[in-house]
Length: 193
Image 1 (tube, rainbow, N blue to C red):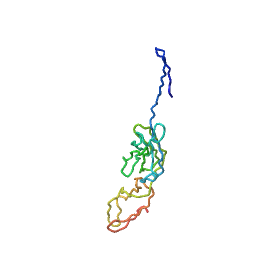
Image 2: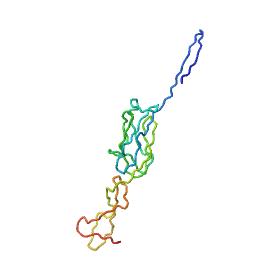
Image 3: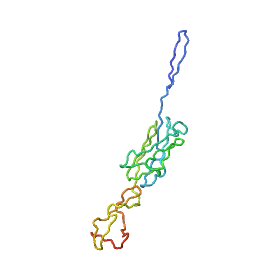
Image 4: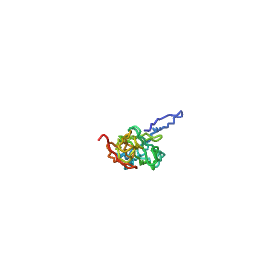
């Protein structure tokens, strides 16, 4: 609060000085809409929202930070986990509009995540934890035996092998596949059966 100091001047006149001190208060970021559990290669819904607070803890809708650039990054998560949107992995920064930054994002690598929101000159905030689960099988990648040929009754020297993943590249264990001959006729027999 104010400090008042009385003073007496040499001609016996008196005066009072009042001093007001203002402590600078830094604004902060605050998660308004937390991330929710999501499937790999999809977007978190509803979108994550981070508000820009002024020094008094109110949303800064018209001040200098109302249009701050806010970055969203992985604070804790699986190795290689990124925040991404339709533009790509680097598109994790948005400009706040009237003190509110909205992120239409997701993650591809399955696991448990915690995010952090940062902006220059503002105190950062971290989100609640959320889980990215493996999505449905969507891609088959050839691991071995891409081009095989042989005579009827012969076995190939390389056993065909594939990797099945979801849209985010997470491996799908136990996926059911049907093998077919692409050209040349013949059939497939599992010699271990």
